[in-house]
Length: 247
Image 1 (cartoon, helix red, strand yellow):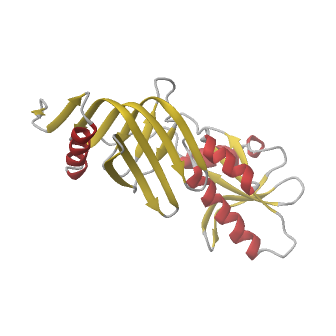
Image 2 (cartoon, one colour):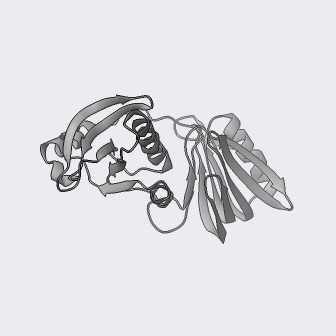
Image 3 (spheres, helix red, strand yellow):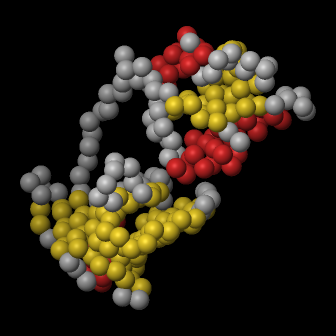
């Protein structure tokens, strides 16, 4: 156990036993630290979909807000993750260290099993710097309203912040065939939560409009995760890649 240069507790273990790693991680979670684990592990996700990663060298980060990220040595995006609001648990089972991050709404669980542990670290800190945003959702909305063909040729915006029982729709309009279109805007890469939000808007409008009305749902953002892309296809929703203006 040692102190960082700012006097905040920091704990690092190299090649610990599963029991020692478990205890260090438990202490870090109890202190609301950011905990990282590096080693050889399998990754199992069970929720709205299921996935499994065979054994590989990976870096797992458990954040005090409940987020969990699993990274490999390549790429900038995690190979699997859980959003803020999850509960982190750690235990030993059959000689392995097991990390679980789960939530109940929706019901999903990320299960990481380490057979080999190279390093465990727990950091306590804060970041009070205010993020300066360049390119907001309002900028993205204005860009589409000024040039509707960016969404698709023939799109006609009819309203912004249109009220529905599920919440306010960012842009409501019609396509060239006269079909209702719900547009949900996001300024950055998005995951399944944004798709579920769009689905709720489409369902609400389908109930409000006449029985034979067709309502299309289009998610607009710079990019989507693989899980979000699969969910869009499952629900018959669409995606348009578009970034807000930089200025």
